[in-house]
Image 1 (tube, rainbow, N blue to C red):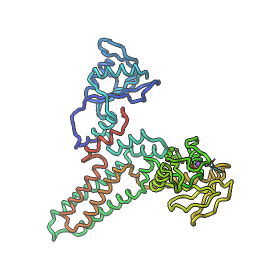
Image 2: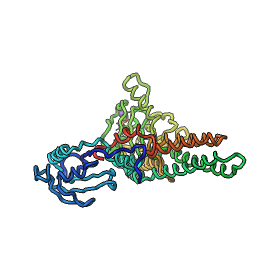
Image 3: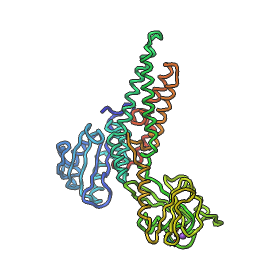
Length: 444
Ligand SMILES: Nc1nc2c(ncn2[C@@H]2O[C@H](COP(=O)(O)OP(=O)(O)OP(=O)(O)O)[C@@H](O)[C@H]2O)c(=O)[nH]1
Ligand SMILES: [K+]
Ligand SMILES: [Mg+2]
């Protein structure tokens, strides 16, 4: 793979980082990458091991002099360009004691290596064309993944699913642009109209595909950040009782006193393999208590900003008005029966006291979590950055389609090219690299 032209640079100095978690453990891996890695490894371990093969070595501050024995380690030497970073690099699999790790780190600093920044290894992999930007983002998401849906989505993206889609568009657009330039060179009277028609048709097709990609209901972004389901309703509906049930612990205070919950309480759970954060809120009522009033204001904010709203109300009190986007659930059916409908919305009846209807409620929530994250077709975009760039590409393609003069189309097509190039990181991304790689952990 070629390196990213806009980021071409000379060999980078060696950096190192602990690639495994800190603290005591069986093995700690220190990874080193950059120009001069061969010399550094030679200093610590003597002759270089066979590439990409685990080799046992005694490590020394200076192996040639057998000076200062540091540890006995498994060493893997990965010369560039077929390494993770594309550079000469190696791994030291050490005994995971803090004193060993710091002694080896000191020895590495003495050889001229410096501690790596967060994401620096993957950033180098990107600079050397080993991964494109969407793949690098996929690797970051893979490390952050907490659920099956997040893991699968991140793995597909790290493997290039999203990048291939964008590269396919870029390749086709490049060919459209080339034909467009050829068209301009034709004298008017000789221009075969079917050539121009075919060209416009391809631009329209590309735009349709991009629009389709954008209209994915934000499912990729939802999987990545997790869903937010909020529980709202009048005081004493049992909202905190329900949160505790879903969280499987006593996260929120439950009491018969109306207005117990004054602030929002958020608990992350996994529902049907999807990350779902449940938000318990202050009971909705008119109140003269400024703190409770603020809680009510926050509850209303969650009604607006959640992926799903569960409106809980007790069976033994006057019924509330249904919030339009919410699922009405009537609690305490042990005290009084639940209405079948409320404002024409079907109502789910439950009793958190005796467990009636709870299994059905859980199924409903799982169905909702899946509905909001499942889909078919091409891999979904997973970041606002992708959305903005794909939108920009589509806007330019639409502008190109609306132009009568072929000469003017070229500029819009070039803008669309540029937007697609930003997606994979081929062009104009220097300004966003710090943000993207800064979110990585150290050692990746
Ligand atoms: N009988 C009966 N009582 C319940 C049920 N669910 C909860 N409760 C009781 O109702 C009272 C209020 O429950 P909470 O969970 O604190 O209600 P809440 O909606 O969070 O109340 P606020 O935070 O004050 O708005 C507590 O005493 C619960 O034990 C139920 O299904 N049946
Ligand atoms: K209460
Ligand atoms: Mg409460």
